[in-house]
Length: 559
Image (cartoon, rainbow, N blue to C red; front, side, top):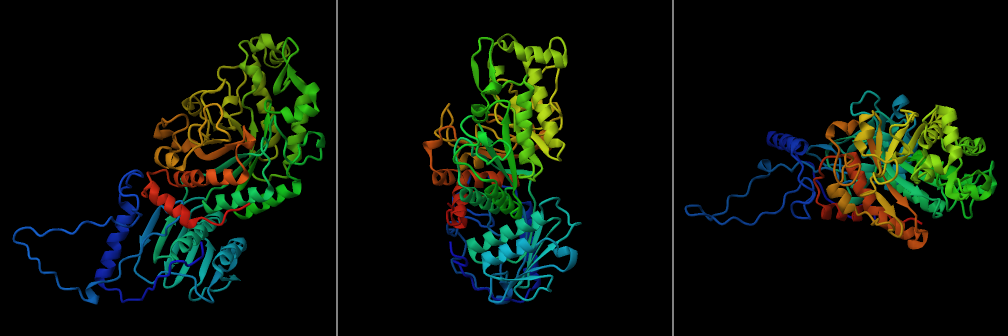
């Protein structure tokens, strides 16, 4: 959509006492009014507007004579409306005034000194989007946008305040990410309406982890396509992109330590650095995932001696023999190789669906695993204990490099002699797999969870195994971060232990959709997710109004 497609003429008017009263009343309503249901009301209702009412018919005794038109002094301009953005802003205090729109000669200015430190990227990006000039450390002039760090500003990490007053805009936040998100709100408002209304936005995320989980192991995605998704995530104030790049079907990132395991096609390390650099500038953290001890089929094709075999000598698909020290050595070499490539703190270790544990009696079926478990943990130890030890050992490798380990929830086992390191974050996706338990089991144990509920947030190509493509409408209307499994939420008292959520794209049937079809299919689910992890309250917009705004804000499709 072209910028400034809707141009509004606004005139300055004197502020009378009645205008101040009107603005104050409107601010109270915008900040305190209860949210309506996303499924209620006419579909074209937008925040800050009221549906038109039918003309009233005078009752007996009422005059049909129209009232005299008010004088200009009696009719101050109405207070401005909140900027239209996805996700919607949480708080807006309207004011009476001209607002702001891009004008010739206007600039994006970073504050002088420490208040402007590190904001050059944000300034250049916004200036390029709005066709404005850039000035670092300069005093703001008429029509300018100033970006400033305010470490003591309330709101917490990633929060921001956006103030439009007297033809200027100031975006401030306690950190660079918050200021960046303020620029996203401003940019969306200009794309949607051509201007930004007078007043103050105070905005902050409900959850610290928000994003997309992408399976590039089963299906190769180009670097350009992934970069387009990074830009999409950033525009929606989503801050994580997880790359699952190793599985049975492929290993998709160049390896100099073990080139024999790499599939064709794959991303080069130079391409990954380009993706990570872009993501860093846009405040998106790239999370790598090398899944083990299962889902290692591509690695095992080059190292068949490390593949797990049962008591009959039959190989187990995708599973390494976790009793063999050589298997641990290989996986740890890969982890250490990729640590410098992915500087972000989160690191996903997988740990799901280790096929030895689906056998009725794993200890009898895999005597070598049972023996190794007893040797490490004593009499009565199980294969599950050995798998837990494997997870802890891999977690120690990445934690030792300052990373935050994560693992899928079915990689945490109940009632065994070994316990998973309590620092490992639980990525909760299912209650159906072997080893998976209801969310409350993990929460009661004191663990922190990230929501990837396969009922709402799994986009599985080809829709195998009873999966259906998720819809933005269903996420928007039914799901919240508390809904970790199925459709029922956990009690609200656990909200602080649920760190956020990601939409997951799994490429089980890789040929079922093209890159372009995947991008189109996840567009509205991502937008809906962004709304619910930024503000878990019931949205004020109807779904029809939300999708209409998403269409207005849509950028040209990427690769």
